[in-house]
Every structure is written in structure tokens, then in C-alpha cells.
Length: 185
Image (cartoon, rainbow, N blue to C red; front, side):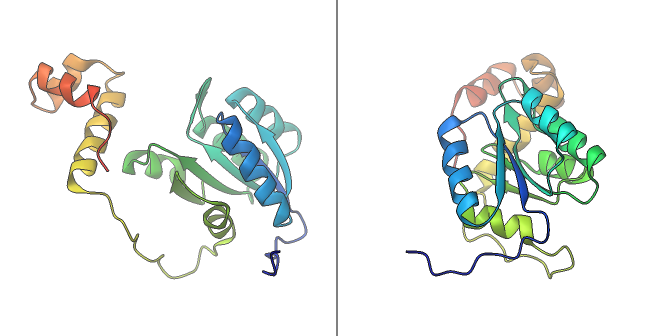
């Protein structure tokens, strides 16, 4: 039995969770409800935008890559509907460029999957005037940073291999081999 005290969520504990991974979404929703949040879920950009417009929540956790688009669209919609919302962008594709984009359009934090409910609560409730967060225990390897950079340029080139290879001064076949591999740890 949990004896940990519930976090202080303020007068409005509404929370919007947007993720297309149904199992993760249900598990996180249950965990957040146990912590005192009034949870509403959505599995797409369309559903997330509809909830953000109709009932803008005080808190939101939004996956970056959704089947019908980009979670940053939901961040923008929610920020327009409720300026004081605390928004965390959650993704399995952690990249510096998307973190910067998320913060620029109004996200208060950005965390990579896998993240547990405690990580999410900590990110949602963190005071923006707090000192810098502790450095990660397992920072990205140099290979992972290189892979992330290549992925970012690839996305910026609208997934055009030839253009990406040209911009990275890399042979097209070498780039294709890198893109075909899984991301390094």
C-alpha cells in the first residue's frame, strides 16, 4: 500500500494524456489518477486538440509522435486555450531539436520514454525557478548523439535521403545504412 503523500496539484487537478500507445496510456492514466489527477485521455492529435479546446486542462502529457501527426500541434492548441497549463512532451525519440521546439511553443518540460509516473509527476510539478535539474545518470552516448543529429537533418529534409546525404557531406549509401539500423543506446 502506498503511504507516500499525494502531490499538491492546486485547485485544478485536470490532466490530459495524449499517446497512441494504448497500453502505456492506460497504465499512465491509472498511475496519475492514484496521485490525485482528474485524467482525460486521447490517442490522436485530433482527439487531443478537441479536448484542449473544449476543456483545457491544468496539466498535460503529450507524446511527440502520434499516428495522425505531431504532438506539438496539441501543445500549441492547449497553450492557446490555457496559458498557465503545465505541459510535458513525452517521447521515445528524444532529440535536442524537438526538445527546443517543444519548449519554444510552450511545453514546460520534455522527457524521454521510458518514463514512469514519478518522472512525469516530477516534470509536471517542477517549479520553473528551481535550480538546474540533476544531470542524467545515463547520458546519451556519442553514437546516439550522432544518430539523433542525422535523424533531425533527415526530418528537416522531408525524409529525402539524397538531400540529407548532401547536407551531411555523406555518401548516400552510407546514410541509407545508418538509417536502416536501430538507434544506438
